[in-house]
Length: 546
Image 1 (cartoon, rainbow, N blue to C red):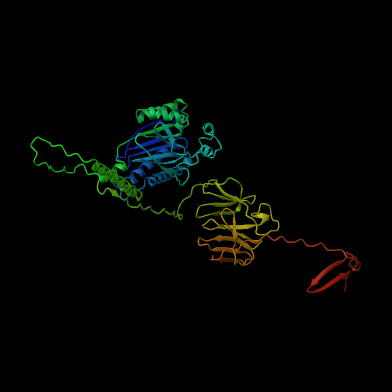
Image 2 (image 1 turned 60 degrees about the vertical axis):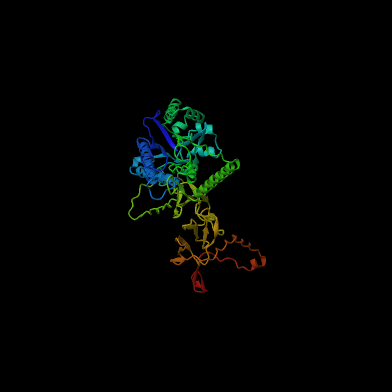
């Protein structure tokens, strides 16, 4: 596919332009794809938004040029290359944002598109968009990572309400905000004559999609289309930076059907058939004999069957991972890509940034666990509610741990039902182990608070602090015995939690008059005192002993 692109950017009513784009020259970069387009919309105030968008575009372009190099050994899947490019761009922007205190919060949206033959690959994070125009119909290829877009998808507000909402600039995912990011990557079928548009929200918020489709359809060149769209957004208000990248797709490179046809047709340089007309006179060319109708039909049928078989065989090769080339060997299966193992952070000598508030609600100071598997942070609110937070601070679970059996009342706000004071640990799977000092038990819960059962074979008198190892081993402190206990896991299932046993109230004593009359009257309180020595009792009255 031949890709002809044009681009235009304008600051609008803003003092500086935080948008940035790139139209990659894939031939000059010696990339094995037909085209690559990138666009970013920075944020962060002052000049930090410009730095974020520039770092993102430069990183994505460099990663794509490296991973999609035509001379690279082992062909890389384009979708994986795009995902890796945005992850590395996220790391770069995040590193810049934490280099200085003033840069905190800088980030950028990013959309990257790669055209390879009849397939368009798109990766994005944020509310910058990618569109595809085909035969006058415009289709949005990306889903905005923004608060109002999520409300529209949930059916809470309408498209018109989202356009007028004062929260439309709040995005839920961007490059450089968090330490890591997972970009949305998708692929689409494209045809010659299609038009691809990448734009920032300064265009999509200012120009209706019908006007975008009409402008792109009428523009004679991609540069004219980009110029007209930016001009329309500026005339409609231009409240934000405006950027548009337009690409026209033309038939150029050989499609899959053409490559399969090359396998069954003779090459163009084949030698002509020898002249069998030896008795012809010079200067005369005899007319070739006319083939019989039945023979022609048979030849046509065989040709059609051969072409169908070649197409079917080519489809099987494509599904098996083969890629067709114009030179022998015509079908090549790329080597599998070996993904390097992620680097493990050595926390021995690392420095730490200033701490920020992860969860703004009041919490207790005696419960804080971090799940090493998924990073869930478990805390307890002052009301006794247990809250499990994602590493970004969002509430994943929220529940009140139930007591195993009724407890005596305790101070208000104690963790657990009926005032039970609990100690909690988490294993790598996110399960919670709750040590209950009053009931002398250890209970195992799922991360969402659902009880799994009692941890058996533990003779406990006053269990307090608890920890769980990576292999499931439980470590306990028994405060009564002043010992550290260890319980290794077994293959036996957890016993169920018994039903709460409510103690019966003591029966009131009955009054017996006969017994009341035999009770001697109380002694005078003056000079009365008791002394206990073993089982002998002495009573003193004014110095006299009995």
